[in-house]
Length: 147
Image (cartoon, rainbow, N blue to C red; front, side):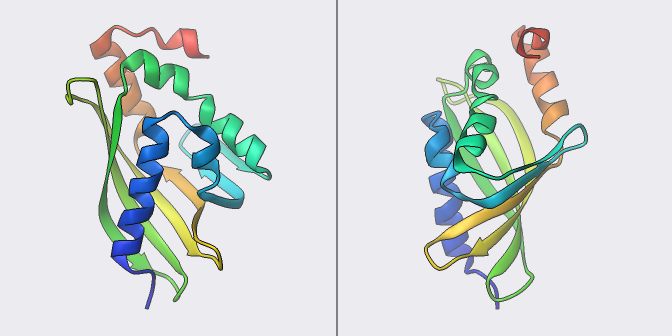
């Protein structure tokens, strides 16, 4: 029961490739609609691919300023909710140009196996805000510049 972990790993590798390229449109195509992002400080649902791409792209200036060159996903846990829906915990490691870790952060994703592909419908940021604040302090990046 549930989505095979190998397919999930391939899916998150594709997600990571889009992040590495700062390709918001490619990343948005990996989302089902509506897509919802929830963190301690934010909750929002996006109804269109254009809105999803714009929302994703809004974080890119900060990631670039921090020196992000690569994103590596590590699947920590998978819980099959149905045959087609799984809850997936992923630890993201963002690396700089010399493959040093800038930041690691965990997310929980609700992934559904749709007729055409796997899609994320919900992402819950576990610790991203705190992790980015620590990384910004370490790298001397003023977060006030990013709203």
